[in-house]
Image (cartoon, rainbow, N blue to C red; front, side):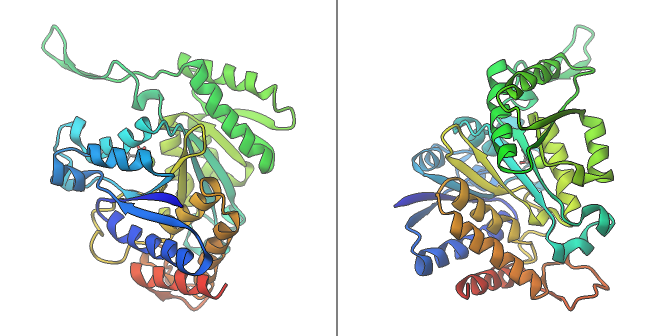
Length: 363
Ligand code: IPM
Ligand code: MG
């Protein structure tokens, strides 16, 4: 029996996770998946209830669990809190406490959604890339950090970009291993022309490359990588990069696929234990309206089945069910495009989730 911790979090997190749970329940009832699920609090919701964005009880729950499904954290309501108790700290705390250093963010364009992308269909059609983002180091966690007052009375904000050789090496290995299972092309993204830290990054990636002679390795500065992602994204197979660059580039890559509401992610530790979450945020502007797209979270469940629960067939069933609801023309507002040539209908969060479950049942 595998234990899954369910952390809906804030904003639309509540709504989209409810749909993903329906999918897990269907797999349990109809496909023999042996899991137990337990819910916990994280983010602003946890702060409101306990005064902490990551309460001890939640930490215990996730440490005991085999994998974790997370919705999203954050919201305007908590923006004025001091940084140490902001919802985002709950998420960063989970990543750090569980040592989830490898963040996999695939960007796949469903052919049915080529029209929803803001880029021309020929630029994005067939897009299938994987961003491997380092998740527990870099400027997000580097010390010292803070806001200090200088002798002249002026305040100064500062953060530190640090990576040790071992941190670079382990994320590089994950990326090379993934590249080996795909098209064997890896692009490492850095800013080695300016930042010593990423000069070391480049050096270590090149050393690790010696163990993977079949992988074609390239290097790109992050500014160019951002440009290339919107110019000719299909040149990439796997990209590996630091925490902050990966944060930025993955949002950019998400938009290539039509909507950030479609993209799942996996954050893994060295043993393959993982936390799975959509890459989008809590979208406070549409929270509670029942219109958020649950597909990124549902696809995160597919990643969980593949990477942590060793049920690759079930992962494929989910991905096929998502393809099938898109074929049926069902679209949440974020992926609905006016004037689409195909008959499409606008649906809400729960309708979309129910349709995926129905498609799964007929598999
Ligand atoms: C993400 C998010 C988080 C990050 C925030 C919510 C802390 O943007 O997962 O990409 O910056 O890592
Ligand atoms: Mg982000």
